[in-house]
Image (tube, rainbow, N blue to C red):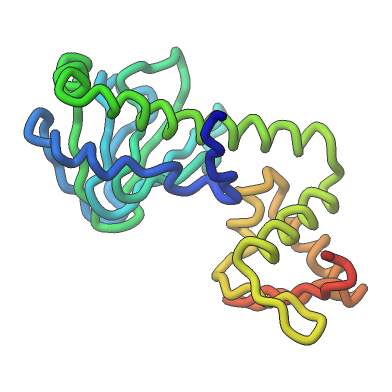
Length: 218
């Protein structure tokens, strides 16, 4: 029977591969301060980025100059810049003080020759990303904005929440901007839907806590 991978709710730190740190002597290490740019849009790096500490954000810069968040990568995760698509306009920025290790194709192959199981771990890592974005695309095509938001809160309630006296409580810092990035909805749309849900008594959202009413999320 095949392995069942975790279903990620947020585009953040997909399936870390900690044992890859044993091969950083093959690559080249770099450090970045919080807010420092790791990769400029359309810069050709020709390396895999492996995060040793901290966290990086990947964003796509649109033709009109807007920044669209794509995903985050924390400790022991990869960002593929070995291959660059034409005009992908991807930008990588350190959102914490971070250290990374860069691997060329030859260095990756050298690590894989020493431990072939690493290949499976890296495949799991990228499969997790592919599944997340396939699922997000399906959500966008199948459900209305309100339903997509409710489905997100449902997943949060049942994966990270605590149930008490008819109420699900989720302790999480989740701004409207972050919800907008996760769901692909406009910030204004998120704010309007949250206001409607609060008025209907379905959901109360505070800065670091989301409370949902069980009868609507069971």
